[in-house]
View (tube, rainbow, N blue to C red):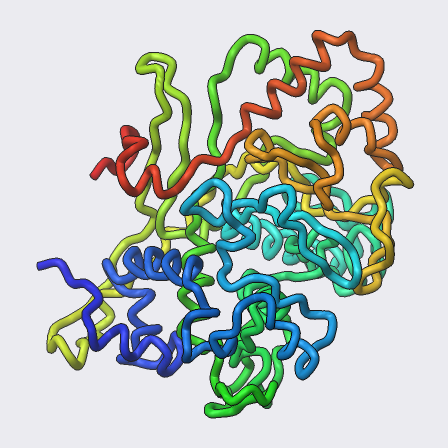
Length: 446
């Protein structure tokens, strides 16, 4: 019989850790719980914490959130009440923000980007870090298995292609956060006013920056003094992390002859040197794969879904159900991520700069933005200041100046083909797949 979350599981979501036997967090990694936990994380992503009297927002409307900001961290904006306030497009997904929904970091205006395929991006960065550290140990050039050479361009160093510790940090437009869990806890505090136990109630610290407390959290604390302890518990953070690790990747729209020609031109003028069409993942961390494609035969969008885990009986018996609940183990098979990025920081020239440096990274240095999904955006670059893809390309400078010049030399129809290719890299609503508005026709069909 199918096993699913029940009321007593939900009441225990905030208890224990992901390795504490019997806690709901422990069940996240078990059998069909694992897939249900993705959906629960998705619900939490759209949860209105401002209306939740048990959350750290104290029910304050966004307009009054500054009262709490002055007590906690003056640079925090607290301008949102839910993750989906900013990550709103397409609906029902961890998408991007509308043009007016810019946020602020260290005084710089940034555009809210989507989190599609975040689990694969994190895994690629972890594997690249392994490659770089192995190369350094053997006194070899800093080149990853995907052929990305970090010695070229800015080179190794603080604010360089990668930091001196050789940890590839793929999150944030400056490439300053290594793990999704840490990224979530930072965003939850900076924009929602929620303090994660793993970050603010962690006596032993988080030495490797993965966003997980190295020891037990101190329960019952209220670090910002707003009267609400344990604002973002380990359980809720784990569910949000689980949801984003398994979030669908972007899809493809109709692939016409013009789109194919544009992709060839994209590679010919050198754009693919940084926006690499494929990055190979050695061990896929996900338990489910979903993506969307255009079917020319049926003239509609369709979805592909594959389950990426197997169940293992490790002897665990759930105390409430008095029956075994098997472990859901990711297959961790190789896969290809059509990322159109290289997970490396680059100098981008004077036409693409912030107002000030951020965490030791210069104003004009950015990590390569993945282009998968860019065709669904309505404004471009890190701050949304480019209104067209053509403008965004022509503002590339620094290490990308050569490709910009090559694009500028193209005939108008060739430039149009490149743009049409980029517009074929799309985001599609996850909700449309879950509700069968976009039918699943490939892979593990329901």
